[in-house]
Length: 128
Image (cartoon, rainbow, N blue to C red; front, top):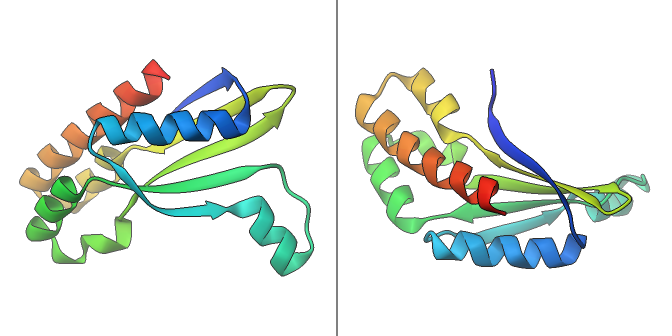
């Protein structure tokens, strides 16, 4: 099962995160959390890992609509977008495909909403 939209870019890691946050904002998504996996693993386990950032992106209008349709859906929120430094100037960006997960619930209205969110995230990733 494909669960994400992804793209590899040749760009500075930090500049890409800034550009990605701005692009998400243009489609109504704000960043509600930022997790720097590499720093967390270093701090907690003294383990080295490539630069890997998880951006918890949330569009409040979509979130409210989804929660009104399925109250426990919060376990799948926010929509995560990851930025992974692959070295040599290559950076992977991936956004979750909410439609792939939501269709398993069997809620047609929620599936339609997830399809719209997926369309927007896929388009955003393609245009980076």
